Amino acid sequence: MTPALARPDERLTHERARYLEAMTDLRAAEADAVAYAELGYSSSEIVKQIDTGESTVRAYLARTIAQYGPEAVHARSPEDLSTNTDLSPVEPGDVEEWPDHYVDAWLDAAESHPDRRPDDTRAEVPR
Image 1 (cartoon, one colour):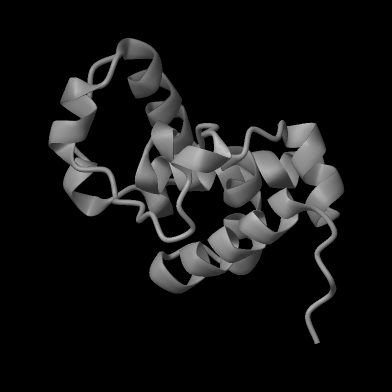
Image 2: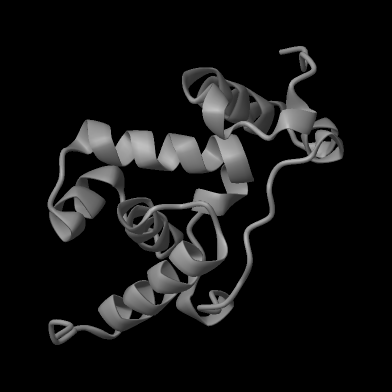
């Protein structure tokens, strides 16, 4: 039995996380962390929500960034967040269009989690 969800953002987060888990390569805990990040929760706030350590939450978010890009973990307003919005894997053309700080964040995440970096983005992107 699923526990009762007390706050509206908990319901939205739960629905969003289950969608991400079903439609992406994210595991359940990673999907939970991403769903909270999309609602603007900080790493320390996500820790409290999913009952894990801060380094674990950072790893979940970094793996997501490596595979789906920095925007995958950006905060959105609840009105702008549909529970069934898809995440698309990073493609080489995406990287070329990003501002430098996105490229830097993505490269850091992809270097830390090379198993999550899409194969077609393996070519070196200059910093």
